[in-house]
Amino acid sequence: MDLDATDLRLLDLLQQDAARSNQDLAAAAHTSAATALRRVRRLVDAGVIERQVALLSPDRIGAGLGAIVEVSLDRQGAEHLDAFEQRMAADDEVQQLWRVSPGPDFVLVVHCADMAGYHALAQRLFTQDANVRNVKAYFAVKRAKFDPRLVLRRPTPA
Image 1: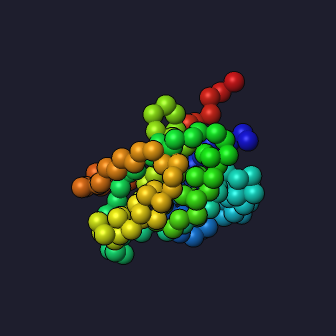
Image 2: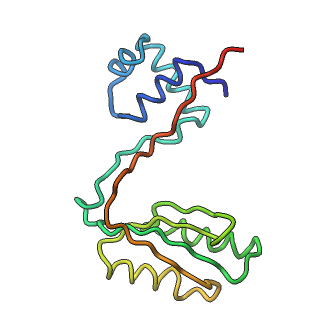
């Protein structure tokens, strides 16, 4: 999909605050409210905007223990990788799931209430799975940066 400068401005503004009104969005993007509404709908319909969500503070909702977990499997056949991926994706405490290469087979970002919560997660997801060969967890001691925004490149003139 070709994105022009107006599309990119709208997307950048929505990444900063998707809760702003259409009037505010249009004013900040230097366009009319009708244009902003039409373009945002088009971006949603095209799948450029996957969804709009509220970002919560893990510490304030009792999910203060964050971990990045590397998982390696014994058997890497497509059916084994797919089955593991589906199980991980179905768990509510798995916030992000990445199939990676080289190195471990998967990297997960998880949030739990505390270390006991992580232990329960590890038992549920990894210990009881005979195909899990290795699990390596890195526990967050400080969130130095968290920004889900993507860098938007301006179109270059042809």
